[in-house]
Image 1 (cartoon, rainbow, N blue to C red):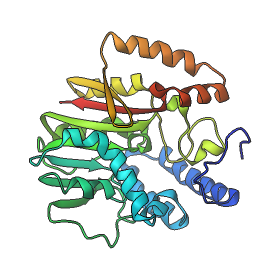
Image 2: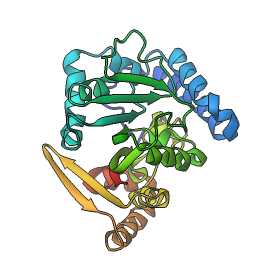
Image 3: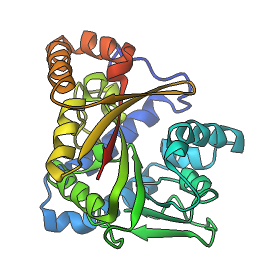
Length: 287
């Protein structure tokens, strides 16, 4: 256990349970990192199912069994940004929906919801509403009709993709979105990481966060796929600050990222975690 990193106050597991989780996840993640594209068409589903079976105290499974009040608070926090993009005519897509708590709330406000994941272990025994469809994917494909989605959303997903698959999946999400539609992508910032279970043991992510990004890296991926506009959103309480990413702002961001990235690990992580700009990434790409 890295003595410089404190266990979160809300962490109810023992050090031994955390270490067991780490060792299991790291072993499974290594299989993903070393796999071929063809192998990953089934490995995402198989390995995540295996992780949840072997780690019954996994935070995502614990979240599913949390109190309704705790779950409602999390959903409300995520809706704070998302609701401004929704209407009663919206067709909504969430990729990597976890326990589907957010997607179920969105379903109350929109025309149609699609939730795509590589595993259904977390959502077993959930009754979905009539305008809700849960879809299993291989981790890259988006089996939804092209130009059919108004708002696509993911929260803590992109970092779980093999680097070779991230661009492919983003292209498929782009195809599914209608012209003028948006993709809201929320992912950890590499500079304040790692953010998976390996944060207690390693200086770079070695668990199921196969690649963590900086803002400038993610911006470049979105532009490569074809998004006409890319904006960074920073949220605080009920306020959302929209920062256009372009030829003026990106060079400044890259300069800041370079300075912080060259700091010693503990200092880099501490500074990046305290600065709102580097704590997390919310990118909104418009088709």
